Image: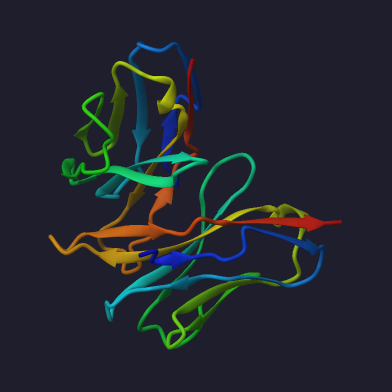
Length: 118
Length: 115
């Protein structure tokens, strides 16, 4: 079963508008973490923001915020005042505890390609 | 502080040749991960190390792939012999055990093309 679902393969957004990228997840763990990464056309994977399952506040990092709705198992990324440089692939990932030991592995979504129009 | 460093950034080789990819993790990070990214399969974890010891190599596709971490600041991923289907972007990532978020920080990747 797919554990991380990003339902938007691609999005076009006008510059300066806010953007919401969807991410839903599936886990039976009580303790987990959710991450968003950005991959521009140059190829590098850039960490954007983290949300822990026990964090009471939604995470924010500059123009990025995470709309965490635990009961709905969603962790949407919100980008305020979008810029041309925000055009990239965006990946949602979940930290999952491995059953064999206390180490962790990241489970990745398929990504959303965001294009900001001038 | 320097991020994760990978070399080379681009590698073009012919089928059957040996390929060695290199990674220097962030200083002080004790976990190191090797990933492969393709359009068809997305991002796949190949292997990861903790304190230079391989912990899980179940993602390594086959015996042609091997990875080593001789010390805390260096790791290699070797493909011998290479095949066209190995063409992909290979990422190295590292994280610090003491980081409560367990965030992985990625290198710039090596784009491998096997002709």
